[in-house]
Amino acid sequence: MENSAATPLPAPKAPTPAPSPTPTPTPTTSNTAAPGASQYLGRWVGVEGTYLVVSDPAQGDVKLEMQYDLDNKGNFVGTVTPEGIRFERGGETLLLRPSNGDATGLKWLAGKTDCLTVKPGEGYCRG
Image 1: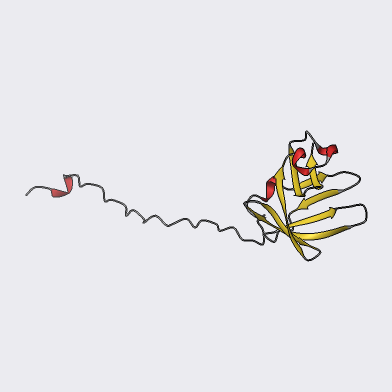
Image 2: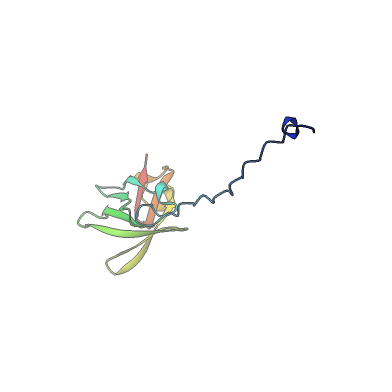
């Protein structure tokens, strides 16, 4: 009688676990700035004491702190759009558009390259 125990048997294969899908985190508006908002964040300077501060209140929109003329200032909520930042001030819907200093129509901002214009005569630049 032959000893079959002497014949090596192939090692058993370990079962291969099925790969588990890795969940992809989904950004939520509660902790993510609006798409494209980062290019607008920070302080922008106008003329004669006017300024604009764009910040992210972590709610999907941006917060606008503005001194927009000699006598008026306020805080507004803006929505980033492909055209710029849309906001409402004094019952009027306005748009902060990326521009240069020449587009603001303000001689003190002429020649600047990184600006936001609300309308002719109202604009803010960096640098």
